[in-house]
Image (cartoon, rainbow, N blue to C red):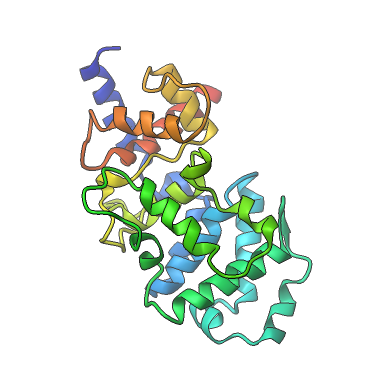
Amino acid sequence: MNKSRLKALLDAKAEQYNRRDFVQNDPILIPHGFSKKQDIEIAAFFAAMLAWGQRVTIMANTIRIMEGMDGAPYDFILNHADNDLKRFRGFVHRTFNETDLLYFIHFLKMHYQKEESLESAFSRSLRRGDADCGNTLIGFHHYFFSEEHPERTRKHVSTPERGSACKRLNMFLRWMVRKDHNGVDFGIWNSIKPSQLICPLDVHVQRAALELGLLQRTQADWKAALELTANLKHFDAEDPVRYDFALFGISLEKSR
């Protein structure tokens, strides 16, 4: 497929799938239930970090966390007492368990006691002239584990330093950064540009990208995520990650 036809296809599919009705039963709907910026950030962070496995389970466990925080995650993070954490006993989502959850809560409390938004946890490592958010993710990983933490929790926060595609963190950044006229992504952060985002590389996106010739590397790692995003920038240099919707949708069509 030549470049102009491929662009036309990607543009059409992005418009078709970048819609609220396409993301019904998707974890992104959970933060859409909030209006306060910090509540959105916290709900989105947990929804993204638990986003592996079946959607129904992801949503159920994210909702369980939100309910455990009395439906007011920002207030809970700042004001909970140790006794309030007992309600999370026995929490488990695949390999993410109560120990990991309690450290996540600890980190968020530490951060929000100092900063107004979770945005600064990422933007603090952004360097002038960065073409992508690689340094942002590396810096976040170091910051996230700057407190005393369980060693087992490190596997739940990915970093380009270990070669990970960082799918869940890239998805979270997409939600927070992209200015989306269709009301899917939130676009409530401004320090990171949409052009610096990296396409979340899940199995659906990878499959479609390989079939369309947008990706040559077969290993789903950071290098592959960079390769795919660089190729998508040929079609939209300012907002390449909007094609995440197109590739995901194309893959679903193929699997039906």
